[in-house]
Length: 210
Length: 210
Image (spheres, rainbow over the protein chains, first blue to last red):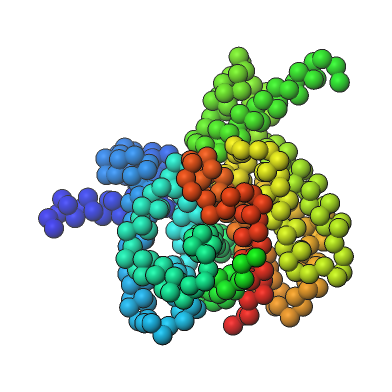
């Protein structure tokens, strides 16, 4: 990498970090590209436009950075399982890659609140889906659910997959927000937060269908 | 009510309906008060400011309108239960008031997507909490959970209450969005959506704590 591209890459990284933080704290739409450029200490307040493009492009770059790292953890976890692994082990592969990633980043993190907003926003939610659709490890997890819960009707399986995703995204955001605000959290660490979510999701997936 | 107040009240209603729809479809922050005034066919495009105040005041008025109606249904449901009622019956009181309210409104609805955004937004989420904190029926439901699940540690009860709320808000928004977009939904009606959520939440609440 020559000096020019290395500097551009450092600038991009500064912008990504500033944007993620401002979006988490104030809301993706409340913050302008100009404010992001200023917070990233770019003399030129059109830096976001120059390095990323639109707000949606910036959101995609943030999502991609984290989802790539989370996918890495998930692939290692999935690779350690086999046909004798139980439901709980596969559910853990849905939850722990994200909580481990946040644990590694160290407090404060912003990605949890960022993802919850992006997942909920009508114009941005597609970005999160595109980033996860291409995940090879999620395909393997889905196949394991099909194999382990053969009697669950397909539409209930789809519904519970969706429930698992919503719970993960929004409970992680809640905890991150509580940590940022200094309000009490039900669990003392990301690891134990994952334990609570996995317990609950095992019950949710095994619940009889009425 | 004289003609002047009756007209002001009709205008407020037009603005609330226009705002809810625009917020659901395009995002609470992507839509300006001016656009809401125009969509409500108010010649004066400062009508939102005049009748409500800020964006946050408008959001609160929308939330309050629906939460009042939902609380009415929930109070009737809670009144029909007693000490012999089981966990499933109490869980139903968390879910069915909202799904029945949406069913009564008839397709298309916007409140589901609106609430999911407001619950997730850093500057607006407090509004949703304030609207639900004052609910007498939710207090009775919480007491029933404490009575029926005495062995669950307090912090796990708090965590699962939060999970129940998150699941309800976001699964309802998902279904509403799918109906609006004409994409497939796992259930054929709001009533059956509630069945699926209640099944899942019974499993979630009864799940052993590891």
